Image (cartoon, rainbow over all chains, first blue to last red):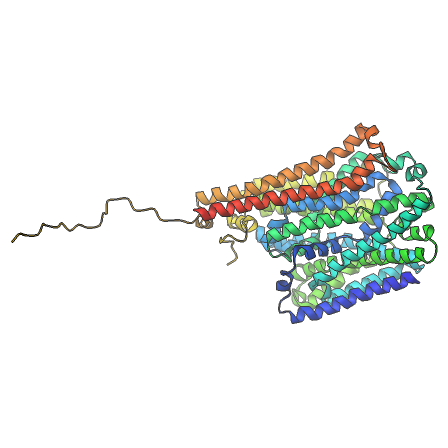
Length: 500
Length: 123
């Protein structure tokens, strides 16, 4: 019962603050200007709130619980991706003035074809990332209340669509910032109780229960070629973060490039703090809930069931309700952020006629953005939460990472090169994703290479982009020097950035 | 009565080389002259250098861990209280180190930008 209340409170709060934000952003003359007064600290909380998805909240603990220490790389990759983003793209992206990835492609390469390809990829990555959020919402509600799986999915879809089409979430950094602190509280408070109980029980060692393979790294528990998988996963997470559609928008709300950097620095601290907790749940899960092992659903649900097993009434119930609230907040905030990004790109770049770049077009876009992943999850596609998210990272690392890195640091990138690289990387990674999700390959090197494709698809995409650019120097962007000035020069300098 | 000394009236010194016009460095960049290109390249390099340094540190630091654990299972499995070294490194120690790398990068790049702004204004 308390889990229902927790979920309803989170949904109501999300809708309520969204509606409030709608009114605020109407009275404030211009929401971009308002956003630009946001300090790096608030902005960073907002990024953290949007970024920590259900896959992080439930999925990482589930994976560590099931597989052991190799899965700690997920939390590391999710955080270290921001270090790479900071080093290579944060300030130049903010200075470019791009609001979406297609905007960046247009500014840097002045090509409608590259712009449209980028838009298609944003939608693809968005769908891949949304699918596990909706699946997870159903799973969380079913675990906490016993309701059928589609109920949680339907609630999440409805709240997200209502929120996004009303335009609330978009304008209010405050909502997302609040979500970060809600999630941190929801994951940090129950573990204190659980650890006290564990201590009272004489602090039984998870290693003794789980065995050597779970504790020691690269034991390959369940999968072949653990070393390759670890490296490829790490590459996907490190270089995929910069290409996630909902991250770029948040950089834009900073006043300048320097603030964008400081925001990302704070994000790294916030994420690092959050990711200290999932391994604790995983380890306690091994001690107290070992019977839940070995199905993706119950691995991901372990965190919600653990308090009930360890604490009596009413504390177990309350802790589970708090965790359910945190998980639901995670599903809602991430899917809202993604839906806004995907809907914006759909209406601006892919819809035609009267839907193009209009408010009604944005609403149609929001519908399309959730339609495909919602249908898939209602049809009963079941995948491990963190697994599916990783494929979205791999796709981003094989397409947007080369586009951004080469576009920002290399004058020689041509529109033909960018197009060839995007299409090659996008096709290779999507085929790998499709084969993996369909379960067509089993075991051995093929499964490892397709299940963690980034280690080869990303270098191939880079090579194609560079090679084709070198072969077609006449398609270089005219005036690329001015674009470089715009991307890299500090805002305080009075320079021609090609925008006045 | 004496005649005043003759005064010779001359034209301005046309033959002397004119004082060079002051061209602000920002204009060199705007007009994409050779000097401007040099400035722009210096700026790009000054920002790319810390970026590559922090990238190398993160990639090598993180990348060497799986190999290290593979080659030295004794170190990875060494017990510290209820957990092993591998868990302590991957679950806790990595995060402050990542933050420190990011902090160093922000500091280095901001200093490079300040220097660049100063050089442009000095001319």
